[in-house]
Image 1: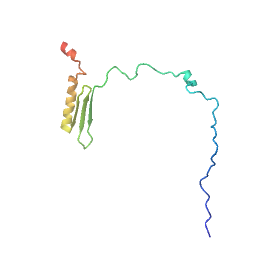
Image 2: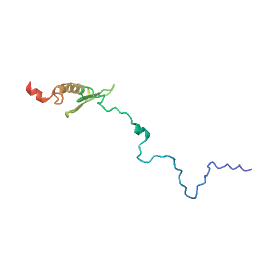
Image 3: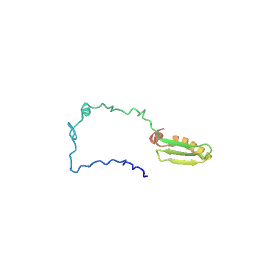
Length: 118
């Protein structure tokens, strides 16, 4: 007794032997021709940036990372070129104090021409 043969699971489609043109859509627009929505126009709000605020911007950053049970680290960066970092509890506390003191001496926060007049 033999097992019955299984039918093939793949169906093979016939491929055409002669070239055929693809069907063309009726009423297509030419390349570069404006669409209907573009002719109507879309209103855009071109004006002042709503997030511009009062003209202030950050000059110096103090980043502190102190995960529980790990050694704390800190980085003090300023646009004037100051870039310092510290590792360890005592050094991080010293960098925080130094960063706070840098506010008074940073040339970007205190204009130098006003100091001569005072």
